[in-house]
Image (cartoon, rainbow over all chains, first blue to last red):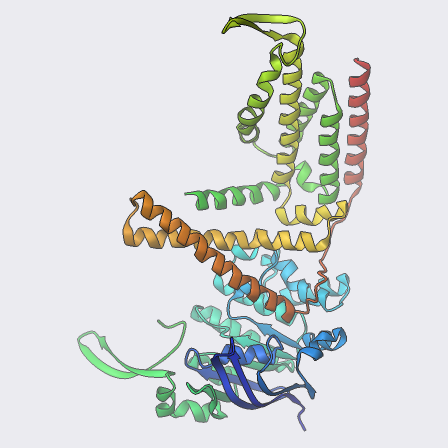
Length: 269
Length: 268
């Protein structure tokens, strides 16, 4: 029997107490699962991910992680906070937010050192991750000297260095070229193969079938409007169109103009 | 454009710091200590020839560190006359430094003369500033900024300060990029020539917008730090390793400083 990683019961969250972001979310994520959160812009995907990572707390409802309720008191206790942070890693949508240290090397070891690893152990993690992701040539560079794809790889490396049981990724392939997108998918799949639970928020329907077995779709009512296996949900074109995930457009092939569905994929503008 | 020259300067400085020269080879902590001692020696030395010999030593170090001497001289001499000369200028006259007259002239009914002692004290001041600035510039050219920040820890600068400064340095680039893009976006829409009033309005708007962005980024970065286990006590990876050459260099500098101060004091 699989262990439950996250359990969310009737979660409500609003910004400044007047802009609702989530209105009654129920969710259960099991160990080793690959799940994707999809939905149009502004449906609360990022907010939900931040709640899962204990960065913000719900106005109403209960979030449990590894069987324990997540709230401010939980994170005020250093031992609990450290234990949670060493098990859950978060890859932010904007890598410039995540890479705040002067060099890539310092960024990768930041997490392990904060979580109490010795310098030797942190150094070993750094070497392992660099070898695994093939980013050894980047470690002395400053984040501003990296391309968008390199920044994303390094951002994932900073999370993997924590040795996370759970990887939460916010739009990991946004703005990337197809080759780098492929590399990122491979990294995510490799982490899942090693036992990590993968939770990804994305618009990129082309990658969903690979990075998720299960999809949760957030609607404009800021609730989960539908969930199911990725194969089954991706086949329902009417549902995808209703949720702004595909649209019908016309374009020309030489002289012939034709109309068909078009998926919202970030690397195919 | 200012933003581009900032990038060019920093890329050049990084390139200098990664050359395989003598100072680049030294441990950043020892290097900071050596430069600190040299500047201290320059400050304590009262003999102009002793300070001049230290300046020559600085030039020798820059050559051994594969820094182009003309570039180095340009970089150090550009600011020295500008600031120090104006400060030192009054000291050459008898009203500030009385003494043996070298040259005198009358102006507005009273006599003004340049004294030997005045020239000497102005000269010492100038060479002292020039040598100190040269040593500090040499340090910044031969050390990567990140290492330099970490090396400050030997002076017991708190880790929190070192880390915050490092983060500021990292995000300056992001903001410079934003400013540059904003400038290009304005240029693409309104052209380069703007009335002064409109120009001032755009600059003020840019400052406000940048402040808002930095405020947002500040919050976002803090959550990213929390997510990776930050609890308010930063820990960093220090990989400094002092070699025999580092210790020998430090010893040599200590001997040199003792000699310079001793010979300067005894007037040999």
